Image (cartoon, rainbow, N blue to C red; front, side, top):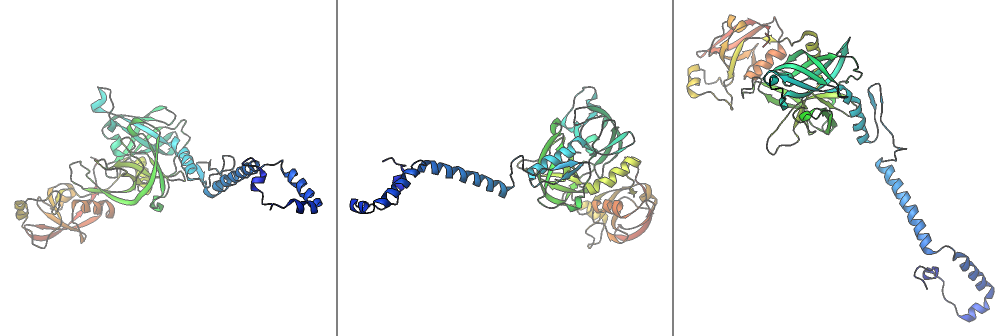
Length: 414
């Protein structure tokens, strides 16, 4: 008897020969039935059932996970620069990248100090985003630090074409700059999204030119939507400004600055600007929110600069834990014991000088609002005042409180 013979699995109860003889017709009928089933063996039935089970299992898995076959899976469709969402998140990344890639360019900054040697370093490489076309010009958003100290700027498009770029305007405070190039052949313009609607954990992609490897795509999530990062505008180690940024763990490296941070709808929701680079630090990249970028970019494209109120004081913080005043300096100010915060004037020019502000005056209020540091002084001027307005200043001189009013002028170009 073979191991997989039908009889091995038979549930027939054995009968005596007498019983079989007495029921000959029934036995013969059973025998004929069993003989007819011999044509389909147990191993054949098992193999067939296994095949059917495998097909059903694969089909159910595909339905439950959304990983349908190539022919039946729903696809994202790009029409007029818009992405029709797909149920497959990986497909959405592919489609979003395809939508924005042609609008992201590589920027080469030929600096004066490298001009004679004809060399480039990492700081001379960056990225940019084509965000609008006007007549025969295409305008590109990038970072101020990408184009700083440039003698000649070039842009490399996604298809490898190199074009001469013109600096339209730049702003050190926001770290935004705008370039222009000939619009001939430029068919894709990036759409800027609403960065205020970003959510923690949302998938984003970064496109740019890291280390000169143009047209590079990385992906990650939004780690934080409104992170405030301290910035030293003069690169002197003293934080005198803070940048509100989107934090992401998408890989951002040297050369990514000025490139696009994109959501899964194919819209630019940020301009990649910096990363924290230190031993043991990973996944800390930052982008300027699109909502903060667009107004600055448009003003730069129109006027070439950002108009801000100007007071004309150079100062240090009275109470700065990183750069504390020496004890003899504090005594020289002769301040009351209750005055703990403010800014000490090192020099006064322009409007401040005309209003009588002098060396070692300690400014504590603008329009009766507390001024606790150089950062708060600058933020108040830039965010809450307008050029030509009168500003009331409260300050201490030789231990006595004083007030004066100054008419704010426009900040001169640096």
